[in-house]
Image 1 (cartoon, helix red, strand yellow):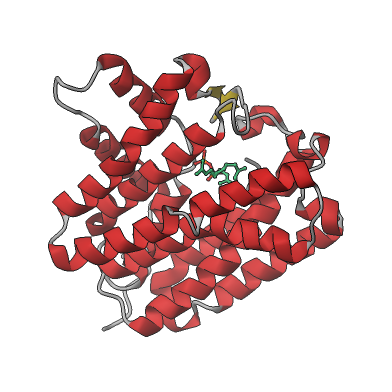
Image 2: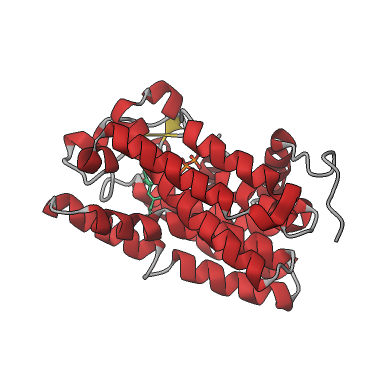
Length: 298
Ligand code: GRG
């Protein structure tokens, strides 16, 4: 395959975010059997101004593997649905008990707790419905299996369980911290890349390279998240900051200090970018996104 010109790989972030949001609106129209408040709560959380990092990773991985990113929009939306459910549930009083998310009141504060739980619940089957109804079985089946694994008991949910347990235990080391993050944060970032590659029929070599990219990017993302929490400006973050320290949480800055955390994150992003060497210019958007993860302020 010939290398695309710089014009064809010029990934327009605003346009991609607009395409994602248009599809999220379309997928949450629901028929009259959906109670109005449930529909409102789902849309309130799903369409709120998040960074859309995971759907962008799906689209960029698809582009890197040689297909038009638009083809990966349903898979991209499915990952954002799972991510949004996890945020709604993470914010609940029984978990993180947060009042603010993406710059607005959390779902249970805006509506009520049972509506928030059920809005999160409804997003999970919706994600699989979208994948299975928008793709032929040859794509829908592997995407569904990958997504189910990433959000199941050994990964997203398992990571969350261990993270909650660790809060009351307060003993831990780097190995334990990374084991939690590889599942709680890393699983959805990694599966985003894999889904993009599956939609584009990427080779196993390409998928392996994206896997390394995702692992390094996931940890870097989490280190930056911890750093933003300890020095963050909540008006930029759109959620309360300085929460981790107050609860004696196991974080990178608490374990290795701010400076070492910063250089670890930079090293991981460097390694992530290196892993994409074989993709040529088609992976430029992914490289830029990795650099953004390091520099982000929210
Ligand atoms: C409830 C099963 C379950 C899991 C919750 C997502 C999660 C697991 C917890 C959120 C708490 C947290 C700080 C997680 C680590 C980093 C993270 C996932 C931040 C949120 O992702 P962003 O920054 O959010 O991409 P936006 O709002 O931009 O989409």
